[in-house]
Length: 318
Ligand SMILES: Nc1nc2c(c(=O)[nH]1)N[C@H]1C(S)=C(S)[C@@H](COP(=O)(O)O)O[C@H]1N2
Ligand SMILES: [Mo]
Image (cartoon, rainbow, N blue to C red; front, top):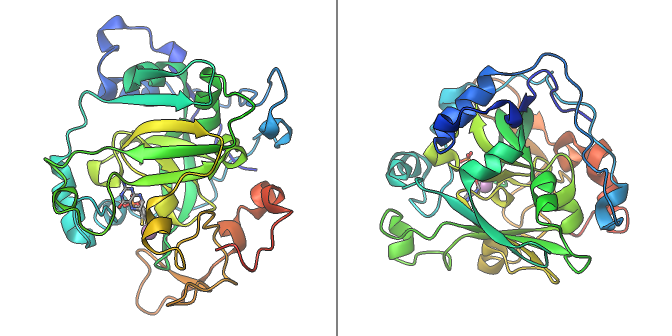
């Protein structure tokens, strides 16, 4: 499996107390201190053998992908709290207030707490993860995210053996988010979820940046989930709460249209959306005459993640 090692950035290198509270500077400084060719820290060396203990460790990364031009990724966003079209959501998201930002991590864990994002960042190894990203609307892109392993973060709060699912909640900020004021479409805030083994998988990250810079507001600043083998709606933006649960959370899109948006939402060309085929995808930035890309099962990450679903019938679990 692929994880780009040459850009590993140990945040422990960042010792200047002056930058302790300045997220932009922390991320920039981490990016500036990228270490050449260091190995990947052992991700799953753990104590009491939880469910995810047998997952493969990550020792590869995909740098062979060519990123989509950044300007396209920044100007073509889905952010329903702001608007239902990509142009307006990009523009209106600039109003989001991201300072200060803290994240509650609670539920079935030994040490629940609420942490400033800066304090989280200081404990995590930031890396560049170049992933394919595919929306359920059948367009796709390649994004060089800057982020860290969700599993590593969850381990810091010591999940209990009763933690079977993870629920993520986006910010509720109706003063800047027009669709939350009108209560349109969803019950707000936006909620997503994963099974615990999916959350602990080394490919699952929390992103704080992209294209070597901090995350633009419209792309989910200051902290978003990225699960590259699932349709884009699972990759929830502007996360303020992470809860470990005994049972599956009710997630926004699944509640809104259960026939169209499953809880698993694993990318699968063989399972059509009720209103369109998922067999191929339009690559952002490709020319009019460029053929569509054949969509791959698990978005091409099957070698890494298929084992998570060995007991499921892949024809039906959209
Ligand atoms: N909070 C929140 N997160 C969200 C969304 C949203 O509307 N609100 N849209 C989702 C969808 S449908 C997609 S395809 C991706 C889009 O990410 P991007 O805008 O950075 O390309 O974000 C996902 N995360
Ligand atoms: Mo999407």
